[in-house]
Amino acid sequence: MFSRYAKTKILINDADSYKEILNEKDLQFIKQYSLKPFTITRENVGGLSSISYTVKPFDKLYNISQTVYGFPQYGWVILSSNFLTSELDIEEGMILSIYYPLEALLGI
Image (cartoon, rainbow, N blue to C red; front, side):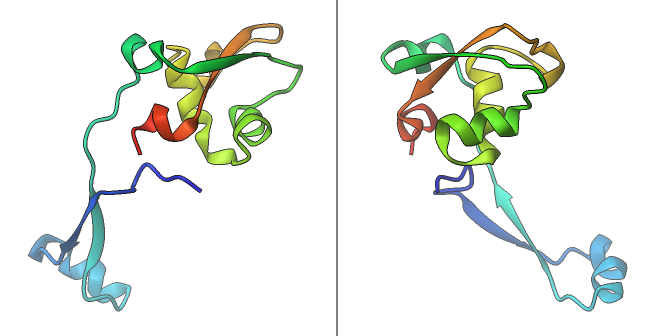
């Protein structure tokens, strides 16, 4: 399984501003990821293969992602690579481009 957190730096946050929360949860620190902004552009998808997927009644991004990538958590990739901003932009009958391989699209 691929993760948008692959190859990212993990930071330990034990800042004083979190002390009350950390004490309440009996924790010493919180792990946080240092993520680089990730944007899918026309250049990212330009050299990749793609298939067309026609949105069916009651489809959700996680269902489509599970169907095409084998993992439900990549709905955001489908949304971004079709230059849509919200799942609300997806309508029955719409044709989505599904780019692959996923590793190349995500740069991992």
